[in-house]
Amino acid sequence: MTRRPFLAFSVAALLFLVALNLLLALWGHRQVYVLKLEKMRAAHSPNLIFLGNSLLDGHLDERAFATAAAPARFTPLNAALGATDPPEHLLLFDYAQRLHPSLRTLVIGFYDFQLTAPDRTQPRDLVGNRMVGLDHRFSLSEVSATYHFDAKGRMELALLRALPMAADRSNAWKNVELLRRKLAAMGMPAVATNSMGRVDDFATLEAGSTTRFDAQARTFLNHQGDWNASYQKIFQQARAAGIRIVLVAMPASPSHRQTYYSRPLWGQYLSTIEDQAQRQQITVLDASNWLPEAADFVDHLHMSPAGVEQFSTRLGRTLASPPAERTDPLDK
Amino acid sequence: MKLETLRSSLEFLAGSRDEAPTLLTGRYGAALRCCVWIAAIALIYAFCGQSSKFIYIDF
Image (tube, rainbow over the protein chains, first blue to last red):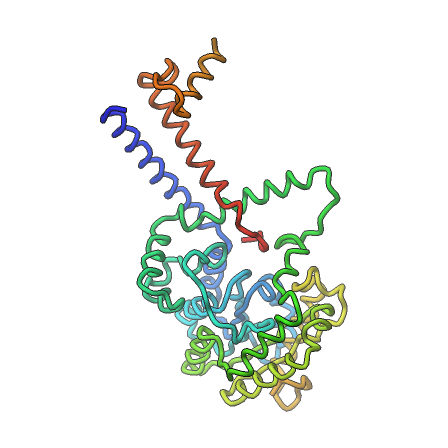
């Protein structure tokens, strides 16, 4: 190839890549995490914020909650976002605090060892809803500090933030995966699905074995572990702003409770968490056994619409009642 | 004739033929070659994540 056509091809390729990045940047405004950030921005003077993952995102009936908690006059903002980890919760909390100084109560829904598991996020992990970390509402230095990235990580982060084509790759892959699943399902028995994915896939988010589950509890108990670094920072910021903190062990399916939460080490872990929380004026509410029926869950983790309403109503009633009137064993 | 042109074009694009066929020469040929490479980039971009494990598909 001579120099002239090569230059022409290079310019054309460059233009194509620029156009693709611009298109992806425009399309990015419709992504779930962006819509959540916009919802947070549009909220009108909320005084209670929910943080967590998919166990709360789309699984909280805000109206039922507010009605049940009428005496407390809560105006809830559900900032929980599916498929996210504690660092994203910290970013979302930062954003909410910046927008709404009216916040007075913080409710974090947790599952298994979420409160104390260490963060090990790499820039390549910031895909899907975890792309909150790539959003330009947050400065590069703030995000780097949140994820504890080193110099190389910061460079990768800067590159991902500059190139929508790299940042949005998993969204393109997701659509290919959906196409692949559609083709694979042709002529095959129907696979149980819900709005978030395939029902059986969510089982892989559980510990997998009681040995592994016990090992996680033992690691925390033996090393007298502390909160996850992101939650620790959230708690500090909340306390500094005079925000009451409530940790809610989210409703677990009967099979999860029977397999994992009946383990003696889970009892010890939860009790240690409770002591630690009490010392820091944090309320712990064990809602893991609030929904005893398997029919209250749509998969291994997530509540059904009926379960959501039941949970939201009970949570609202519990949070609105004075501490002395509460009956939950772990709620101090 | 058309099949022969297609074959020689594919061979040229794949590198097994040195001489570009008439379809891929001249101003329109250059544009066509651009389109081929753009399509290749787009397909590679879309399909290079096949080893990713998707649990949540609602983001």
